[in-house]
Length: 154
Image (cartoon, rainbow, N blue to C red; front, side, top):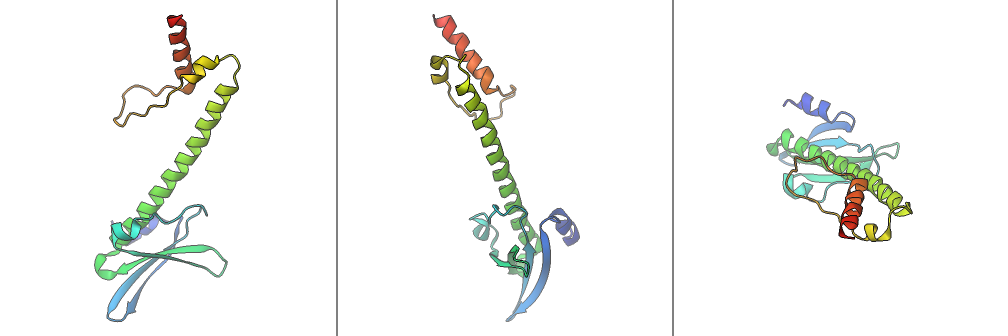
């Protein structure tokens, strides 16, 4: 992928890029601004990609992260590190939203007085690591199945 394509891919976050001579080395800097202030640099970025990551503020007070490395590691490595951080932060954001949705769903179940306490006590959370070809069940379906099992036992 060309540099222009890499920049276009991160366009909403891209602030600038430069190559500087530091001593006898050329250093690449790519500056990005994460749109969500809660986003952060993933802790293993520097080790995983052999880049240096830092931050500073632009004249308007906007937090700018910069990814830099020796020109020998190449632009792709720096852009890979940026992509990695964007992907990880987007995933974390989606997980947080999903968590809130599921908590509200669960809260509504516990507030429903038509569901017996014995059924609520049997709610279990199981996650299969392998892909399951079945459609995932809603919490209501799981509770209904538990209630059906209770009725069968009685």
